[in-house]
Image (cartoon, rainbow, N blue to C red):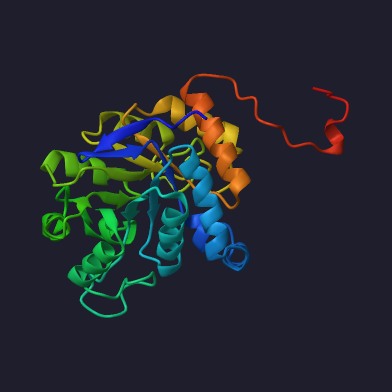
Length: 284
């Protein structure tokens, strides 16, 4: 079996394909009904089966929030495969000065408490979530407020800091200021879904980033077919950059890994096509 290529981030070897978790935890970016479907469908055991497929290809890097269900699945997958999963945890925490600042897991807790929890959950990387990072961005001053305070806390706990952002400015401001981060999470897909500027702008920002970039939402939350979305991102990022993909089933995981391997190697995929009656006359 072909193993997935790797890259170095902050001195740690990561698979260039990262296991995303929105389709594990119910963040569909489609509808509340779709969110409920995901959470009702996915059990700890079903997540473990998906993770095992990724691990079989050497994809051992996972990105997600500090969610107990996710951590339980990661622990069990490690037990069953005998392979350590590298955990990139993206926590939210209170930066607003009151206890109702956010709605995600841990968002109302103080930063140091949240970083302690991430460390206990086995995080190698800790990247404050977009809800934190983008709230700290000061476009007028062209800086990210308080970022050094938070990255110092992360370093003190033996984790590697980075930034999770939806704002392209976060990458350029962090680079310009020499912020103590080793990587960036940045939305990147062919249709510009949830991106704040045009795709070619983000393409250039990723190309010029001083640190490796972890791209997310390559399929625009299901709005792009896997061959289309994956072909675009793999052909336009650098060798040190990564793609994060969320899947719902082991078959989807296998398909995304194999498509990605083909595109990285510039091979035309030979994946099994889905069939409907309207294609009967094609006979390919």
